[in-house]
Length: 290
Image (cartoon, rainbow, N blue to C red; front, side, top):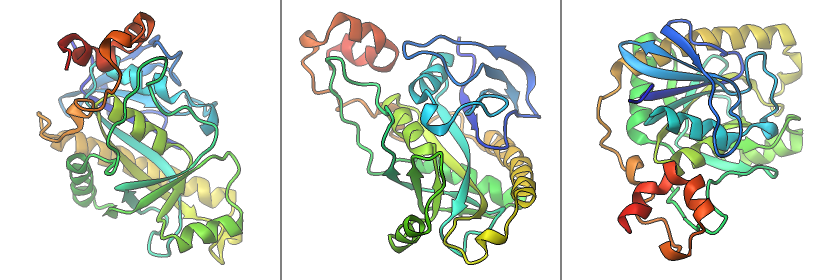
């Protein structure tokens, strides 16, 4: 019996889900090691959800240290089919103001040190990733923003940088010249792995401040940033709650069959250890021979 159907990943400033009822902590072991923290499973708007603090409670884990595979695999183990991921970001456009929420439909990769696939070890698979976000899930989130009264913008590109340092002005201006909308350090790998795991995925990018390209960037102090973080977290909790309330019971998108034509390896050539490790991800395709 699934312990959850909807996964929520909390980013900087959002380390818990206050409205969660019947909450219990679930610590998991995965074939890829330990997730960032225990999952908090419970009921939100009469739906079973699982919450995970991306950086661990207390914000202990750097973006480059995150075990993305374990985090996503853990959701899959719990029975989750959809993931709503919350992330603090910097704005690369004047129009995206602090306290705005952007629901990007594209990602651009500027990371260097991260494992971002479940595959390998004798099993080759190539998922389609032209549209990295579940459009149906994004629509639900944007409508939720409208109902709550938060500025929620559908579309745009999230540039995922390595970090943990922020950008130089030269980098920031190049990203702007390329037309990027927001910049963060975490969500691209989650999106890739969620697609490989056949889970719907959407990002709620909470604009905290303008990136260093902005002429008034240096005038923003830590207290101001923290104040925006706290308000964003408050708004995100409300939007997630509304999103969960409005979530259709059944998925009609293609996310749940992303691997149907992705596996290239001859089934007879896949090592037994790899089959065992990836059973939850690809088992139904290997067993059927299709």
